[in-house]
Amino acid sequence: MLLDWFFRWREQRQLPHALIPAALWQRVVEDSLTGFYLERQQLDRLRELASLFLLRKAVNGAGGLEVDDYMAAVIAANACLLILELDLDYYDGWVEVIVYPEAFVVTREVRDEMGVVHKKRTILGGEAWSRGPLILSWKDARPDASRHAQGSNVILHEFAHKLDMLDGAADGTPPLHPDMELRNWIDTFTETYDCLRERIEKHRGTSIDPYAAENPAEFFAVVSEEFFAAPAHLHLHHADVYQQLRLFYRQDPLQRLNRPSTK
Ligand SMILES: [Zn+2]
Image (cartoon, rainbow, N blue to C red; front, side):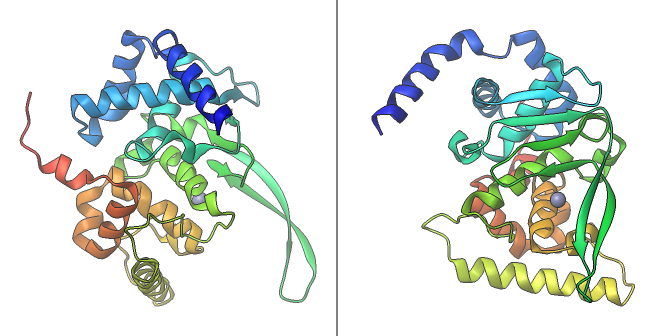
């Protein structure tokens, strides 16, 4: 506890020197944060959190990519948007973000129903390990990535996995706040998830990215992306899921969207 206190005190003292420089921050805001309609105070808080995030984590390039300050700041800002009203401690327990230039190939051993182990190659735009590194492809994560237009954001997606895994299990349920009902969360998420899977099986259209039907962990990560990046869409089709996410993230992106412009 005392060590925690000391660590925080030292960090707060470092912050003014470690703050993401104004010009760089402005670029990050214009390129990757305008779509979230944050108020000035929220942007200031986000800048602080992102700066502290960069003090605590190493953002390293791989596959020949050199991570520059802009890339690190974009990743930190998007990561911290999820925890803007929570706490940076939600990202405790791991230290490294690894960034590849583009989608990367992973080879995993998977056991089929017959018990036979196969090697499976998968191409990923991001990956989050429980208590391990978070991996991103810059081509997919950069603010002008084409997927972003559809309310998709791989940085939000992978960091949502990190929040889900805080209690040790990637099961689509992060540790909820005391004022939330676990029963409500599970009922809401299970019902929507089952319904999504059924629609896909019957080849019907879906309002949520079908990738969410992979498993409950992917469901949580995908709806978290939509909650921030396409809140009106999520609210229109799944107001109950939106409501649970609003309680968990303690943010209301739709309300920000509907606020009269103060500019
Ligand atoms: Zn995922």
